[in-house]
Image (tube, rainbow, N blue to C red; front, top):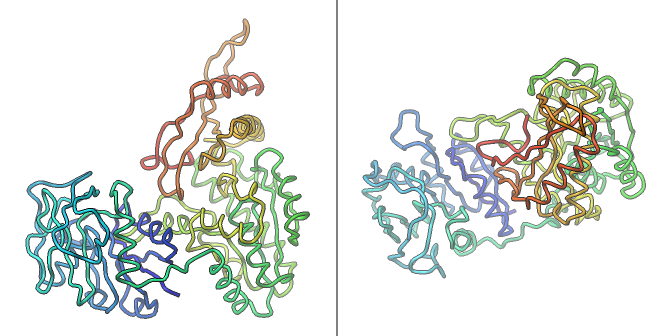
Length: 510
């Protein structure tokens, strides 16, 4: 299978490179700059892209790369830091720029290049660098300039090595998709065969070969990821798949009954249902630290799941719906992504249970999983559901959890989500939810003073959850929802709206 390997030097835009490539129906995945030459040989990529990064190539402990990778023999594209590391390795010179470039700039193409085929002679690109090239390696030629970068792109077409000082992966680079497409199809000669159908075929064959005559267990949370994963594995191994759904008491209003209907009646999955809500809430009593809550939920889930799974004979594998952003956010590698928070799907479970993992979506983004789900005939109304965190409402009750707070949140959240659906806004939003805050405020209802809870509403737009912006509601919508919640949910007397983006905030509050 053709694939483009992205080597990460710590750029905030690295995941966007992957997105742009996959949108062109070519498979790509990210590896840290510490990747070995041997690993590159094993992966046998069709092409390699070196990402940008926040450091200077001359900084102490600056991210480096094995020079043999640059000379591996497949097309190479260096972006920003990636361009500079290529030049440093091959004899060029990188220096601090007198005039740093951040933001939009005009790129002027000065030489014919496959990389710029069909691109306007002058085009807007996105810059983000404080260093620039003052000497390029022997055998290369300059193909474009900008006001502050006399060497804005270069290439050695004989060696198939290309580099750009700007970021074509960012939407602000007006013809960035065209430049990336030229690298994929005119330089790497990709065919663009990455599709949900091909992914399913490849995954089914791989799962069959891996599992053999053994049984597989799937922890069905009721979310999109685990459900699509279960249906994919079911397609591969049929009745050798055993699903377990654990109600942890942290689900949304009426969620357990709704997903039971879907699993049993429409998807025909073999599911055992366990109500462990009292156990989870008992262990969470008095706990307010968000990371501690996550760990308690994770360990309790393991205890319950371990007990139930031991009743399934010959079970050797565990299916999880881990996504690519989960993996990226949970990895801590110098020059790559830092750990933001622990994820319920990443790490821990197999070591205790002695089960091997099957994570078919470990390299996919959320929208790609939805496309796979449609190919597997899972209903659209279910696939279009907003993401829901593994720890459930535990991370939406900020501070200590109680059944009372959870019930308040369920009712308020249901009013909010129902209003989004009734007004046709639900599908315009990536994720929306309510959060109970650990404060109370004074209010007036009728002639009486109240001292009740504060509820925050959150709604964001995003493509993959890696970055997100807050949704601009009409004021009348927010006023109407606030009024309904305060009037119908006794215990809430104030509603606020969260207008922070990711970054610097995360989507969830905890």
